[in-house]
Length: 380
Image 1 (cartoon, one colour):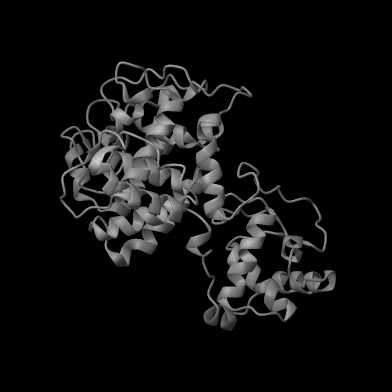
Image 2 (image 1 turned 120 degrees about the vertical axis):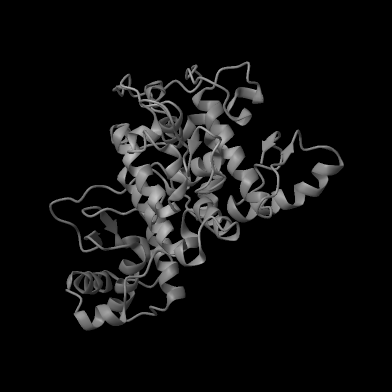
């Protein structure tokens, strides 16, 4: 990772959202996985000066699960975890929230979304808003802590990576919730998707292996040695190997510091390509053409090149496809700790026949269809 002063974001309408047309199938699959039929690029509107009785302005500490539960309680309706999960899902869909974990103070949530298929009246919504607006007593807070949005609603890649990281002992089971919260917080800072940050770490460190290194780069996003590079930017210029002594939580703090040092906030909302180019070459983020040469030096993972051909230049389009391909392969082919890397040259032949059922099962469970079953050249 090299810090460059060459970066200056272009003010142009040509912004490729998660890879543009190259990522269309992936985005559709993720929408199905999240149960979100709306356009994931649409975000909640900022708070207006006043809102209708069917709208609620998000306050600090709110999340969709909490909002849904308090609405149901205000209606005197079933507020069990199962019913609240359904209501939170409806709020996410009705408000076109691509990431239900990411709602910000000041955003306006349309409670009318709960009227789709549910018995919710205007009076009930008004009563529910009064309940939402009322302060929560300390006793109630003690007995009813804020619930997280159920994991099944969002971030399936991050969740699979966390499970895998526990099984490979990259993190302890007791750390899992804290690591999840940290990834979500970092992603929120740059208006990125937690799944995208997880995808980057799957490429760079096999999914949060704090000991990952190639002799020159170290840790969960591979902080590299040398002047004006990643390790130096986070305070480890003279002792980059010491990064390996840190656990995942501490290394995630370094990730945020590095992102700040390289101006990632200027890219917000940051796409998957923006996140990964911040790791590879921050200056290349200014290139918005999905098919342009990103001028990435050195030999990178073969999956990042068009057609897996290192003779061709890496582009946003090929980088995006390679990152998704790698994540799909890693999460589908969970192996035992210390198992040697595997590579499938193509999905054909006897060996591939054994892989296809597991790959198809993974795609069906995580992405909602079989769009990945015909992909080739997985770097696992």
